[in-house]
Structures are given as structure tokens and as C-alpha cells.
Length: 276
Image: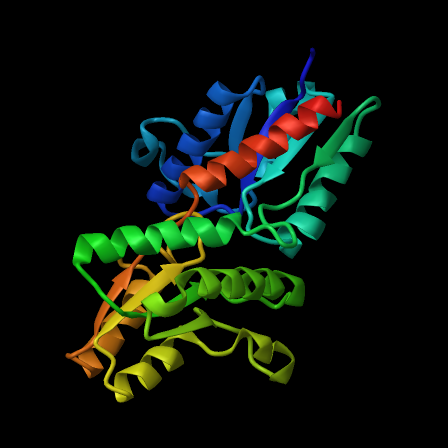
């Protein structure tokens, strides 16, 4: 079977650790499936110096589509490395792909669904396994858990977080003292209030209530400037512990390289192959 090239597309990053993690996922998928899977960012990734990336320059979707390889392809399969239907995938990416398609005859593309599907509990299970690993490693008994994502202007993306959060809460149940979903940041105005509470506000509330152990469960895929070392979430957590020295805050790892997430991505590729 002649399969199209697959682009594993994420949001892009200026952090080398995010690009390298993205590459590992793409490489695993290439080995586990019959597809050639290439890691491509929507934005930013091409700005990282190659020496920070083992000598190989990262690509964005625009760079790839304009490259000799991109111009020689007639069919593309796009696998989004996104938790939910971000406008970056549903609008911006599609706009770039449409332009590529229309610039030559005989071209086509297909964009697969993002990671979460309605009523699919696997992302909650992945988060739960990361939380349990942390609890065992740090000998924590009954912490409070804050499940945090970036925050979004898109209600459909927020609904993904909330559905996964409800599933995660049911799994954790009696093993924790408290639970809340939250956002790292949000746009101003009442129309974006569905992102509340903010992580900063939640940690302030829990600190004032005398909380001691708090697990920040990262609903992020890659360790970029938000969920990476010395990133935005680290800064928010450091500010909280400075205000409340009795409160110890622990973070789970991003989910991008989790075995469950890999199985979802692989399943989507296998389904695309069988429907070809």
C-alpha cells in the first residue's frame, strides 16, 4: 500500500526540549506504523538554532510546505498533537494546507482528529498514572490536585479539559483532599470566564486554607515555555510556595510521551491506513 507522508503537527515551540520530545514521538510512530512520520510545528520551531537540536533544524508547516520535499508531495496526512480542536488546527493549519493544495494540480490532504474524543477516558487515565507515579515517588498520601491547561479562547477546547477533569476526579475519588481544573492564563472579559479559576488564584486559595501537599497535574503535551523547566507554571508555583512555605507543590510530567497518548496516536494512524 502506498501511504502518504504523515506530519505530526504540534503548536511549535522556542524550547529545544519540546522539539526533541516531539521528535521522539514521531520516531516511535514511524517505527510502530507503516507511515513516515515527520514532526512539524505550526509556528516558532524553525527559530531554534540547530546546535540545540542535535544538529538538525526544526521545521514549521510553512517551511515544510515550501520546501523541496513539501512541493514534491501530492498527498499529506496530518496527525495533530493537540488535546482538543484549537483554532491553530481547525483554521490556521487548514488555511496553509488549502494554499498548498491549490498551488498545484493533483494535491490532497487529510487532517485527523485531535487526541480527545467524547467519552474517551484515556487522557484521564494517562493523567492518573502520572499522578500515581508522583504520589509513590514523593510518598504523598492525600494531596489536593489542580489539573491545569494553558487556557483558551475556544469553548470547545475548554470542554475537553472539563470532560477529562470530571473523568480524572472520578478515578482519583477518595485518594485526594480536593480537586479542581484550572487555567494557566486567560483573556480578559466575561466571555472567557469559562477558563476560571486561574492556577495562581487556586493556589492562593488553597494556601490560605492551610494546604500542605498540592499536585499540579499538567494537561500539556510537551515541555515548552509554559510546562517546561523554569517555565510559566514553575514561576506560578514558586510564587505560591514563597507566600505559603507550608505548601509543597509537585508537578506531573507533560503527557506527550506517555504510553497511552502514543497508543491514541497510533490508533488514529492505523485507522487512517485501513480507511485508505
